[in-house]
Image (cartoon, rainbow, N blue to C red; front, side):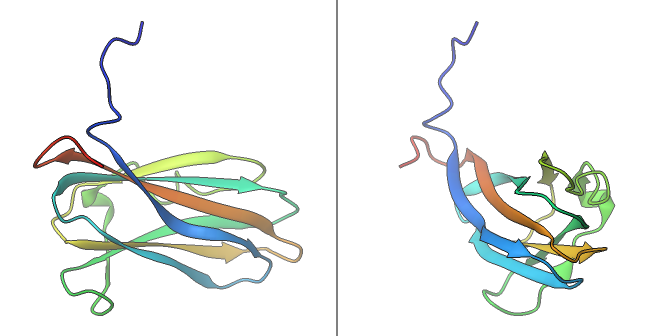
Amino acid sequence: MASIDQTTVLKNLNAFTPEVINTDTKTDGLEIDTIGFESITFFMRSTSYADGAFTPLIQGTNTSGTGYVDITNDFLIGTEDGAALDADKVSKIGVVASYRFYKLSFVSTGTTTGSLLDAVAVLGSPRRAAVA
């Protein structure tokens, strides 16, 4: 039974604009600013799957647009390999590092036709609620 409201303490942001990835490459998502929030979780989805494997890569920085570093498994809830996407799958991965800005990218392998991918970032544990 759902009895507690989450809508006032969560903020959803586009993390990866829907895109067909059909080459073996790293494809960057959008920068996410976590100011005012203490937690971030990425939800990723593959649709229209044909082939390939798509492994998320989470990076963080304290300076917008520059200086991104890979977040190691010690600071992830789940692993990037465990959150890899294939046929029509939804996965998630959380981050407990202390950067202000994050970016989700996909590293694709074994692709010829590829897949349509997208992702959202859910920010939680706001310093002040309610969230707009």
